[in-house]
Length: 295
Image 1 (cartoon, helix red, strand yellow):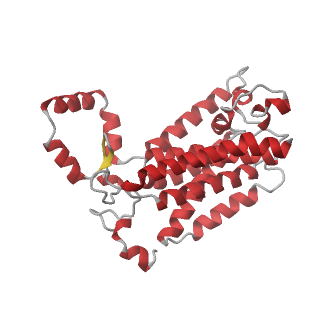
Image 2: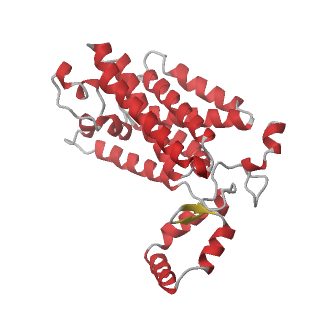
Image 3: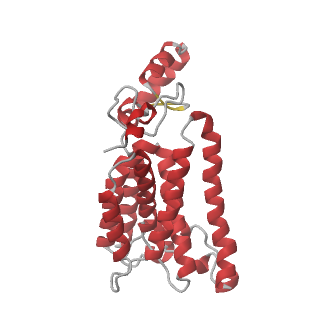
């Protein structure tokens, strides 16, 4: 259900399907469009009317190039036009592949990719400087159950959130939330290493929570699910990094708020700068705050 204020604001709904909410705008006319109405263009996603106008004005050379591109990648073209959450599926596929590598005898992938704050602070730990572990830790998991729970949550939330935000914003949200989870875990548990996509998944939770509250949706189910996952993180024996959960949720909620406040095409530059600011703040926490706290 939605609030009267939300229902009366047609900018929150697809202009061709008034019953479908969306947070994606046509990059030409700036009208709100749902996944079914999105068509990928050089400027981003555009609505059917703008797509028709663009096709009408194409030069013969542009038409030939478009026909060649369609012949080379029909599957990619159909996925874009259908508004499928390809980033969500791609993350799941890559993460599952890395887990298969973990099962190879004698090939300890987890030790190569897991995160420990010492890899960012070689002057304190004596370990080699390996900052990429902030991200690669999201690809390895402690077991099949750990992997299944995270990927199930990603699949459930990503199918809703990715079409609403757009692919690049969704990917940015996922990665920065994962980094935020690793950063907070490293500060609060400097003697331990961590693996898993829990921080990134909780970032999706946080963003969806902020967006849902904004549109007046019934968020009871999400509150319950979020609460259960947070409580499990504090139960002895589960081995779940509650620190990463909280860090990811905070970053995800912040990014959700940024996206909500900078939806218009005229605010795109501001949105990009704010997202860069979030990334810079995370780096500040990792390379300035963490040494100060742990030193």
